[in-house]
Length: 98
Image (cartoon, rainbow, N blue to C red):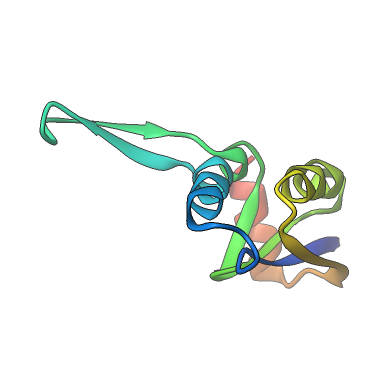
């Protein structure tokens, strides 16, 4: 099965914009009342089956590539995308997150 690998950098973004980018991409934990309540705020990758290899590298299904690239380009992040052959483990992880 084919998939896509996306490698991105936010080094050209301001710290504020990079944090906003990361929160919208990965989601974050929102704490209220001095940490008494914790809520998970979902990000784009919570909606899409994905596997994060290392910081800045994500494997996704090819059908979701345009959605992720459009999001990343809206922030002017440096993005490199390639089609790759998924390993059995990658396929298993992507199927389990559907």
